[in-house]
Every structure is written in structure tokens, then in C-alpha cells.
Amino acid sequence: MKIGLKRKKQELENTQLAETVKKPKKKKKVRVIVCIILVVIIVIMAVSCSMAPEAGALVTTTVATRGDLQESISTSGTVSSEHQEVIFAQVGGKLEAVNISAGDDVKAGDILIGYDMDEAEDRLKQASLQQDKSEASYQAIMADNSKSQAKLSEANTNLGVLEQQITDWKAHLKNLEEELSDYQRETGNNLAAESFHLTEESTELQDEIKSLDKTAPDYQTKLDELQKELSEVSEDIAYNQFLQQTYNSSDYVAELQKEISRVSEELAGFEEYKAKMESQKASSENVVMDSYDKEQYVADKELSVMSYKTAEEAYEIAKQGVVAGFDGIVMECSAVQGATITEGMQLLTLASSEELKVTFSASKHDVEKLEEGQKAKVTISGNTYDGIVNKIDRMATMNASNTPMVGVEVHITNPDNKIILGMEARLEIYTNKVENALLIPVEAINADKDGDFLYIAENGMVVRKPIVCGISSDTHTEVIEGITEQDEIIVSSLTGVEEGMPVTIMPEE
Image (cartoon, rainbow, N blue to C red):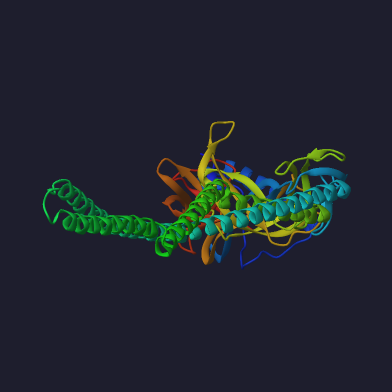
């Protein structure tokens, strides 16, 4: 069985050693000479051992040492920007100048795209005229509405007064007419009754005259008396008739009739004015705006104001042009000089050149060692930068070999303008570190189904010792338990060894 084969453990791939105890440096020539001498010695000893089998197999050994060990992961990734912004057109219009193309390096404040300001000014002027027109229309409509409201208010007020006046004048006319009727009825009844009595009396006197006895000695005397009475009654009848005519044409009756005529005329005037106010009310109600109409006109006016403000803001935005908000690199540019664009159209993609990262895919073994916040060394195009692990994806994806891989991002803390996006970067991520640990060479470790173990030279015999390993670098591994600093650890042998066989130790330099 061959000793000193390096363990093929996935978690020990790409690691780094940082030991406090360092071997002294030697010049290259000295090392070559020493190696040649050692090879000669080994060959001689091997020949000697073959001639003396009882001496045992020739092996090199070492002992565990105390020191610091830094574990690391060596890998590669791709440089990209941590912050990319897709820039859309804030306003529409015609593009007068496109000052950038994909791959350009820009600074914050640079004007990337310029608008045609003549066209923008025309749009602003149109919005201003539309606002003035809307304002004038609104004022005219409000003025007409105010007049209509005044007429409606006048009609409502006058109709309320007219209703009461008409009611009062109708009552007054009715009283006058009743007074005239009562007067005429009372006066006519009295004169008629008197006339009736006088007529009856005249008839009775005439009957008495006819019934006188012409042969009676007092005939003439009675006749004269009756005729005298008849004459007086006739005079009363004539006077009664005169009174009737006089009462019918009296000043009192004339005044009542005159007042009745005047009141009737006034009432007719009120009725006519009422009809006019009713017509005015009806016509005003048809044109007076209700709350919904007024809200609509107010909304139209406000919309025109907002449209102008929007156009004014768009003009100012177009005047400034499309400006870089940060130092970056143009990843994509779809804007074309002379083209007319609409608001919201995609113009370009700008990636920050100050916030950079390296992304790579980690295997499940590397992910076990990775933590956010770990420091890293980043090498890009021969330049070295500092880095820090700032993101580890929470979801794995399958690679081309159908192996689950986890995305990891390393933030570059000190980028410069030499870094080119999309370039490959070498990463050395410093994971675990131990101090004053028990360290052994990686090539001394063996492994089988039962785990890691070492071959120890003890009293000239090979002894197998299981060990528990900790972190590893490319050259050394931490041993947590299983050996001491005094154990002679077999590192290599010209022939295979196994537990229990005799060995001859040649200490490792």
C-alpha cells in the first residue's frame, strides 16, 4: 500500500496555508543540490535494505507542529456590477443627440442623450394656449351661470312676494265687490219695499175713488181728499224712483266701483308680472349649472392646468436631457439620434463602475465553508483587489453536469477604472482559521472507508492511528485528535507499508 498519497477530499480543494512557524528559505541551487544528495542517499539505503531485509523498509517521517492555519477556497468567477439601472424616457420627444454607445465609461452628471428643444418648446406653447383657452371658457361659463343664478334668484324672490300680493289683492277686491253688492242690495231692497207700499197705497186709493158713491152728499169732499192722497202717493212713488236713480249713481257707489276697477288692474299687473317671473325662473333653471356640471367645468379647468404643468415639467426635463446618475458603464443603448420616442420607452442600461462584484458557483462542499462577511483576495487582469462575501444564494441550480451549484457574490471593496466588466477574476476566499493548532503535512494522511488515519513509526514497527482532521490548506491539515507532537508520522516510502511491518526511519529534512 502506497504511503503519502494526497487525500482526494472535495472540501480540501483550493485551500491556503498561513502558518506562524515558517520554514527557512533556501536558494534554488542549494535545494537542487540537497535533493540530488537525498536521492543518492535514498538509493544507497534502498540497495542496502534490499541486501539486508531484516532492517525494514526505508521511510521518511515527520512530527506534528504547532502553528496557525488559514483555510481558503480558490476559484474563479465573472466580474459584474452590483447596481444596474435601466433608464427609461421620462418624457417623449425627438432625440437631437445620443452621446453614448454600449461599452462607454461615463461619469455622474454626464449628459447621455439630448432632446430637440424646438419641438419641446412648441409642445409647451400649445399646452399654454390650451390652458388660456380653458381658463377663458371657464370664466365665460361661470359668468353666464352667475347671471342665470341671479335671474333665478330674482324670480324665486319675486314669485314669493307676488304670490302674497296677489292673494292680498284678490281678498281686497273680493271685499270691495261684496261691499258694493251689499250696499246695492240693501239700498235696492228698501226703495223697492217703499215703492211696493206706495204702489199698493195708490191702488187702494184708486179703488176707493172708484167705489165712492157719487150720490152721497160728501162724495165730492171724499173724492177731493182721496185724490189729494193719491197725488201725494204718486209724488212719493216718483221720489222713490228718483232715490233709486240717485243711489245707483251716488259718489259712494262710484268710488267703490272706481276702487274695484283699480284693484282689478293692479291684480292683472301682478298676474302678468308673476307670469313673467315664472317664465324667467323656467328659462334660468334650464341653464343654471348644478353641482355636477360645475364640478365638471372645474375639473376641466384643473386638467388644463395640470396638463400645462406636466408640459412645463417635461420641458425642463427635456432641457436637462438624460443625465448619468452615477459613474458607470453603458451596457446597452437602444436610443437613436433623430428618433421620436414616447414616455416610458427604454433608452439604455447603465451599470455602476464603483459597485462591483465577482459572481461564481460554489459546490456543496465549498458552501459548507462559506459565510457572508468572509474576506477574499480578487485578482483581475493581474491586479489585486480586496473583497468580501456579501451574498450566498438560498437556492441551488443545476449545472451542465446536473450537479447542484450555489451562486455566491463577492463584493470588491476597492475597485478602480482598470476593472472591465465581464472579465474573469481569480478568487481566494479566506474561510476558517485556527491558531496554535496541531498541523501535519497533507501527503501524510491516508483514508479508507473507516475514515482518516496515519501510519506511525513506533519502535521500528508501523502502527496505524485513526485521526480526526480539522481544516486544511494546500500543504497542511489540522489534527484535532489521534496523535501527539512526539509521534513519528510516516510521510513517504520507496515501498509500500502496512501495519506491523518493520521500517527504517530516515527523518524528513
